[in-house]
Structure formats: structure tokens, C-alpha cells
Length: 392
Ligand code: GDP
Ligand code: MN
Image (cartoon, rainbow, N blue to C red; front, side, top):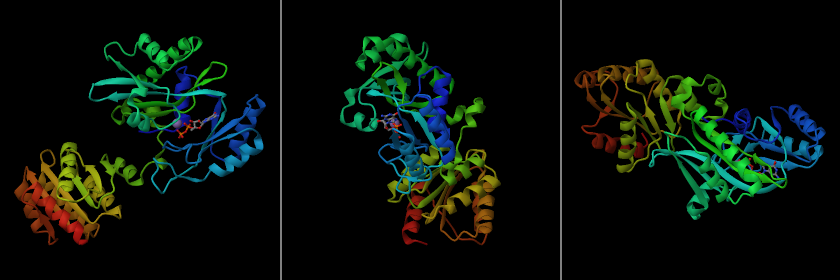
């Protein structure tokens, strides 16, 4: 689950991590009020920041610094409501419906801090780099040595000596080291306390008067841990998410939209991955990842169908089921009902194995609808790829 920058900064502030003064605003009036208040309290400038769930806002024109209230008003009008396009939004962009208005900082240096799970090392890794403010993926590709890493032993957690090493690696001044250590330990605590899966401060800045601030903050949470964070769950902004993925989450379906034209309906994440692979191997391209889960019922399967069909790129549907907890006859009944209810005209190709597979096949045959059933997974993949290429 992703959240907005202003929400992430609230969490940082609650953990004692320094963030600039500022407030979120949903309308022009609210934004102007915040800007006026900041100027009245002595701010030398304010920064107007688009709140969307994507990075690269600065380059896309979604972050602007204003020296006076007139400029602030101009930028607020420009950014609020705009369709902001960044390298993370896709070409259609994302509509900006709220702003963060903050006091500007007198930036001396722009640095980078991040915490993420390193799956290969089976440990969290704390990263720090002097190359802040730019895309860290680019730094990692061009100059991996520019990213300093501290691997965190899960038994003892992130240690002050590790934070000190990173602070020195960033070339911070002696007067900034202790403050930086406290800052990094605070970030680690946020990561652990919230069951985050990613926490990034880019840029992490030093100011001309030796202060440290998180100028930007991105936090992603582990969806599987959200059941124990009711207060964090409320931060979800579904307007920022793919509408089909939101719909799928209502039915506890694991759905991720992709760019291909073969829709997949599979039970089990491993089988879903294998299905996407075999479609590629057969020369096709999957339209989605969809795991209906081990115990899917008729309602979920109908919902899954509706979601798959709502994707206009889809030319054919591949149902790959290994009947275990989800018996094949139950699935077949649901597929027939959904195909009839929703008037599906696209080719449907199935590969079925497991419990009650014979009953399942019979239900499909007797339905009066046209289904293709592959003898093997590869066979079914070849059929569905050909069907998708044929258009109908
Ligand atoms: P992103 O582009 O989505 O990652 O948004 P950021 O919040 O990182 O902002 C992009 C860039 O805008 C930063 O790297 C800074 O260079 C600049 N910026 C953001 N806030 C301020 C500020 O308060 N003062 C100044 N001078 N620049 C800022
Ligand atoms: Mn940033």
C-alpha cells in the first residue's frame, strides 16, 4: 500500500524525524491560507507540491518554489487540478487533487536515504548516498559505489555505529553527525513500527545553518501486515490506484494489471507466475496477473471475470486451474455462469487438472458454450496465444 508524501511526513514527525513546516490543502482557498500562515510566521518562501502516488513530480512541474504570496497563488492554480505526467505515472498522468504547502528550506546539500528489504541477503538494508535529489535507480545503474549500504541484523536491529558510518560516508560535518544518527535511527523505527516495505527520503537535505530535514518522503507498507495497522489502512487513497485493482481488492482477488492482451485467471500465486511465463514462452503477452486464491467461490470468480473483461486490451482469456481446495467442478460451474451472465464473446481457453477434473470438463461440454481446453499447460498456452492473435 502506498501513501502520500504529506501522510508520510506526518508519520515521520510523530517519530521525531525533522520535516519542514507545512500542511496539506484540498482547495485553492485552503492552500492560500496555509501559504499566508507560513509567510506570516517568517517563511522566506513556500514550496507548492503536488500530492500524487508517483515520484518525479519535480521534473514534471509538480513542485514549485514561491518567494511571495502572489507567486504561490500562481503555482497553486497551476498545479491543483493539473494532469501531472512523470516517468512513474504513465503517459496519461495523474490528476492532482491536493497539495502540500511547505516552508522552503535553505538547501545546502541534497542527499539520499532509503530502507528496503534486500531479499537476496534476507535482511533490511539501509542505503545512503551523496547523490540525492535525482533518481536513485539511475545512480544505482551508473555508479553503484555511490550508494553506501548497511545491512541490518534482524536480531539486534539497526545500530548507532552503522548510522554513524553512513553519516561519515555522506561527508556530513562533525556538527551534523549526531543529528544525522538520531535522524536515521528515527527512520528505522518508522520502518519497523509501520511494517513498511520501503522508506525513502529523497532528498534528505542539510541546510546552510546545519539543520537536517526530510524534504521528500515515500513510504510503502506491507499489505500483508495491514491487518494490524488500522490507523494506517485509513490513509489509503483509492483515487490514486488503478480502478480495476481497487475493484479486485474488494473481492480479495490478487490482481495486477499488465500491458498484454491475454487475460489470466489462475489459482495460486506460483501457478499465476508460471502461467505468465508460459504465455510469454508461447509468444504472447499477459494482460494481468490474477490469483483467485485457493478457496475462491462463485462470486469471486464472476467478479474476476468482470474485471478481466473491463480491460479493453484483452483479446482472449486463459483459465489455468489446479483443483485442490478449489474443486474443478465448482470452478467450471462458475465459469459457465459468468460467461452466460456477462455475455462473454472472447475466446476462453482452459487448462484444468486436479480434484473433480472430469466433472469439470463435463460441465463445460454440456454448457452449450464454446470453450477450448488444452491437454497440457503448454498446449493451452499455444491455443490462447493463437486465439489472441486471431483477434476473436
Ligand atoms: P519528486 O520529484 O516527486 O521526488 O519531489 P521532491 O519532493 O523530491 O521535490 C523535487 C525537488 O524539488 C527536490 O529535489 C528539490 O530540489 C526541490 N525542492 C523540494 N522542496 C524544496 C524546498 O523546500 N526548497 C527548495 N529550494 N527546493 C525544494
Ligand atoms: Mn523526491
